[in-house]
Image (tube, rainbow, N blue to C red):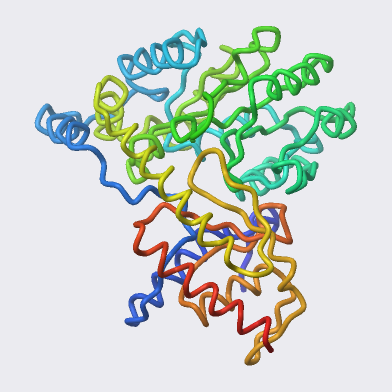
Length: 399
């Protein structure tokens, strides 16, 4: 007999991690699976960062670190915010956590009470929805259209706000769509927030360094709502450090203190060695970030060119991150060899079985007619993956 809590029963399994696990299991059986499911750069962490971690071990960074992070790392984050984003966050406004996901749940648990509404802009990253549920909040989904580059309008946002709305979660560049809001579009959203006292916005900017057109604009750079923005970032994507698990926030002092208090009871300070590596990443003058961005741009152009040849796919060319999100509703309702495609999750399982390519169904992202494809892998694998996808989808069309 299992006696699980209602909060755990209410949560979904992360579909990105579930598909990655299925891929690993098939690979362990000797099946040649190409995984386009995880949001993980395929590059190695730059050597100068790894050397800093090795030195930290030799320097005996093996004791409990401060709960919100080492002071010099927080100072480096403060400088990064100022120099790269034009944001003035003091050290006491910064909390270092075990990845961006940890930073986000810290914020949600710190300010959301049961029954509070949290607006999610669909398509949204899978964990936002269930983290809100975990806090007892009510996710309110505002849907966007492919024809509008998967961006919500200020009017849509305004119409979704009620007297129970406490938080909006905003993400640009976007996971899962790769779309980027312009500075003007961000300001329009900021003006909506400004009109509603007690409404906050969590701006997830983890992909800021992977942007192909224009420049990244931080939500908090709109100074008229600066004190109502929580900026979330980290070293995972820009420095190929997903496994090091370092994320951080810049926030109003009272929110930072709340996250510090919460983290003190959950995890305490995060891995001391990883923190020293993150410090090196932020202080380094390496060209690795630009080299990775250029590689992702080349891969974006490659995969989008290949996907155009597949009948039934509709998509927008992403402007950042390393995802493309095609509309695959053309294939819903079709059947082949015992597979009935009733949802995009069904389609993802079909493609894993027939093409040995792992993608993620759009339902978990609030985009039930789409799939997410990550192009964070080599050119050769992308070419082969799309060839397999095309063959498998043609079988559905011809059935």
